[in-house]
Image (cartoon, rainbow, N blue to C red; front, side, top):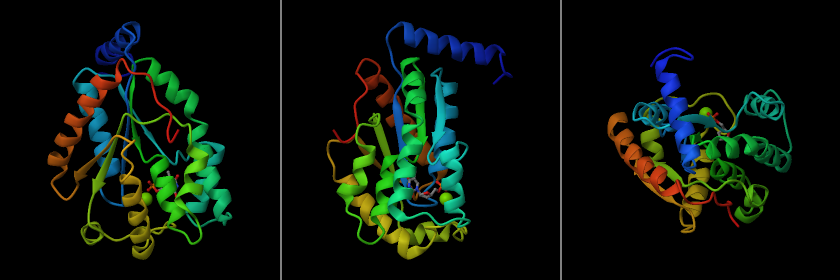
Length: 232
Ligand code: 2DT
Ligand code: MG
């Protein structure tokens, strides 16, 4: 693809510049799904394919563990620290909010953002805990940039289990994943969101092709439409 500042890079920068000048914003594309459904693999492949097709696309992930808030979250997930359940929920949300200026700037520059987990993971994983309502969990993320496409990588938990052992992080257990999946199903019922459910049990390449086509459509549709606000 050429090194930094090489011909390919310059081409992509020029494409983003063209898009921005033509008033075309980038699309906000989110991938969600249970553990080992293929979110990270598919997010990376999607960014590569979009860039190869002449779009300007970049990858984001949540939690983004590199910031001060992200380091607290990482330590919590690695079970190196304990954080009260409500507090940690708000920290996951704060980790998204601290990236909103960057997200808005990139989109306005015509850059499409592919995001590996977003507020939906936030709601699903906290509301999988006892005594957390879906409604309470959604509140801190109300008003975040609304995705133009949310791909849900659908995979039975038994199939996910067959893809390998769980890691050692917090939440990586079958009963918890089962409850998180039920919460995801409730969120999937919200027709005000651009959900597309994709069968993630197929080959990496088949799943990728479907996501790529959905994303091309989302990029075209988002170009001249203002960015929305989540859950407002
Ligand atoms: P990975 O880094 O492997 O994706 O795991 N989570 C994530 C939450 O509890 N709340 C959130 O808002 C988000 C984005 C899901 C990250 C783990 O953190 C959980 C799995
Ligand atoms: Mg994980």
